[in-house]
Image (cartoon, rainbow, N blue to C red; front, side):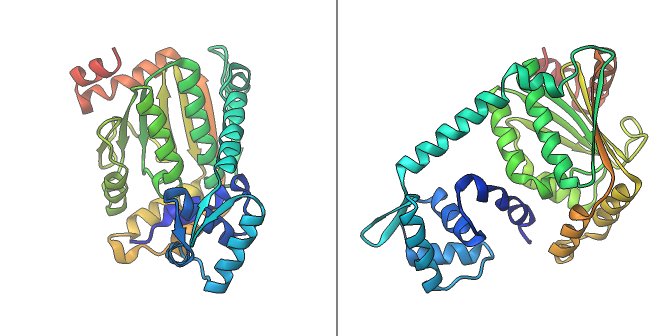
Length: 301
């Protein structure tokens, strides 16, 4: 099985980590998981991530990163320098202070029942980036611990597995839970459900286009507290996703270029957020038929 989500999500580290090339980024990434690797071990890790590299090229990059104060060499092994790691932690804390405060949340979250906010996108990758941001903002702003979502296909696990893992960690830290209904049972839906399964904070039910939830396959809905977040895909985007999910019937059908083409092509889509306690409650009530009133009561009491 091609690890598509790693291919798509490793790129975001480059600027934050200070690397100037994908090879430098791969070297640094290999040392974020295990400290104290030899040049040969780093070369193997870089090559296993899909990058072409030679022994000479790796030594050149290791020397460069040492000179920039990112790496430290002890004997024949290399590690990330602790001062550089602490600088990175400080930078992340500063960003967290800016982006997880009330003033920033008010820029994207409606403050009244009548207000709606909508954003338009021509890239599904950018749309999901912002969708995850909104959900994190709502969890922090509302203090809600339960998410309810419906998706015709849970394709976000293909393109944003790394970010979704972080999202789950935050949800678990807040002792939260995510009830999810997916409106298809294709091979790819079942595969994505298996790799994102986490019973400690997520329970997913796969329907086959259940009418209780779905009246439009262009709409993806998440409810957090009194807020409703809706993703609306354009006709072309919806058709491309439906076609890909119907065409992939096994591991042999998982072609990287096909998946990349589906999600990187310019297509129309939008996200809307509104505060509507009545509609939010109505949406949550649909989950009683799927997960049972007792479980929902315990999680959302």
